[in-house]
Image (tube, rainbow, N blue to C red; front, side, top):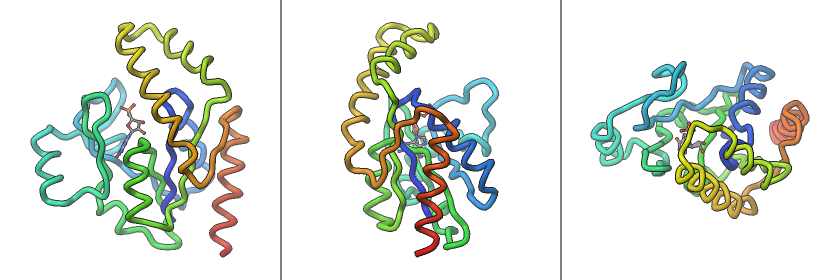
Length: 182
Ligand code: 5GP
């Protein structure tokens, strides 16, 4: 099963996915390639495959990506090899943006598409402003991107308001179990 999780930045995608993986050791996390620099604590081959732009574009030319997108000036992409290994008993979860998610749905009709919504968009925007690590322009750009991402929510199979991590993962559990039983 291919599970795609998207949502605006700051909604809690990575925390939700971490809890999903903790509960389901049989689910793998797709490791994307990216040209952005690693953040402190991030490891190559664990969090992402951190690659130079030249290598990324070479992989695009060679058709190695199932999807890729440019997000805030950096390339991000899911390698086909990551998805080729998926069987009914071996699930993979992709935490990717809305553009990448729509490409995945076109290629893999059976992909389960989940969109995480914040309980309160305005509150999320205030939280981004409060981080203090970015310039006002960068914050404005993040907020714009979040608003753009929200317009894609309707295209997903499931939309979950992430009020509480455990409750959100409980819902994803129900979705996955329902599909596995089909
Ligand atoms: P970050 O730089 O904060 O790790 O991720 C920025 C955005 O890129 C997030 O919305 C994340 O979901 C998205 N992203 C991460 N990997 C991929 C990928 O392989 N493909 C696409 N399309 N988006 C990705």
